[in-house]
Image 1 (cartoon, one colour):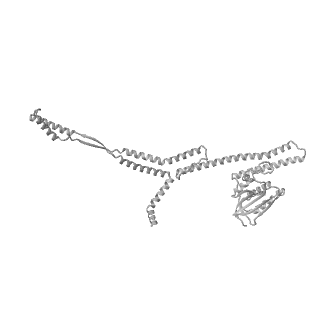
Image 2 (cartoon, one colour):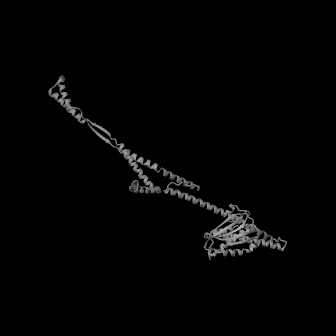
Image 3 (cartoon, one colour):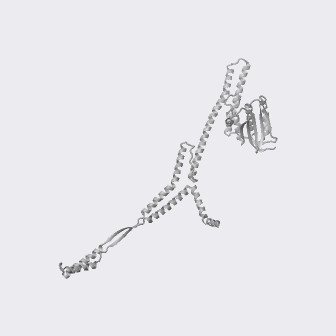
Length: 432
């Protein structure tokens, strides 16, 4: 029974509730609709107040005017009749009895004096109109006061942001256009802050790049210039000393060329000016070929290399030359910074539809902070910038850019005295 009653109530008032909710939603989302509704509501309340006050103040102020003109005229006529009556009867002034009779007759005929009374009603509507207007203003002011204060908050926030305080955020209230405006201003401040920080970072990067390049170019250039000056001034005693100076100059020139080439390549990668000739290749075969080419370098060190490849061919869609450069940089880096004697392990596996190449070598302990910066250009774990380890300082930065520009992933991990560089590419077909 109760359920049926509730259903009947819902059936009757359901449409009204639905309309009310719809109106309420529009009011929350539209300040224009909200102001129209407030205006209509204030106007209605003002009319009601004005109507009520009109009834309360509806008292008639009567202006009374008494008119005695008819009574005076009647009295005048009576007195004239008395005078005529006295003359006609030749009544003496000493005849008091006769005079008293005539006066009594006048009193009886005249009766009371009558006066006409005029009433004028004053029914002024001016006070009720004034009350209605004043009520409208007061109600409208108090209802819209909160919204006006929020507009002031938005204005103050915008002024604060315009002064350069890009960390300032305007608190959002409601869902209407003002709330959207506050959101947009906050978004603008956030974007401006990000852009400024990006520009500052780019400026710092440019300055660091110039500083590092200048340093790395100056070192071999100074060495070349010094030895060539010795040769020019013939400051050598034996022929083999001349050969030694020439070899040192040549090696430094090669190092200078390597740095310039790496710098040029990194600049192109940073500006996305490199064109990739992507092909489907077998990663197993590429790594085998690359390791064979590096055998002479391994033979000149106390570092060995071992391979752990899966049997199936791992096919990826990449630029063969660029990927070969990536793994060459990683292997040369492993040789250069590995604790000697030791072994470098190259592991190829498959992980959730991705190829995974891990290059591991034994090294000195690396902190988390140093590990997070290892792909930064010109960054070396050893803070010394001596040329003992060789290299341009751009190898890992170039490797990272080449991998990511081909939708790959690269990371460095350190665990139990070993550092591993892990490279992933999407597999096209893991079977030949």
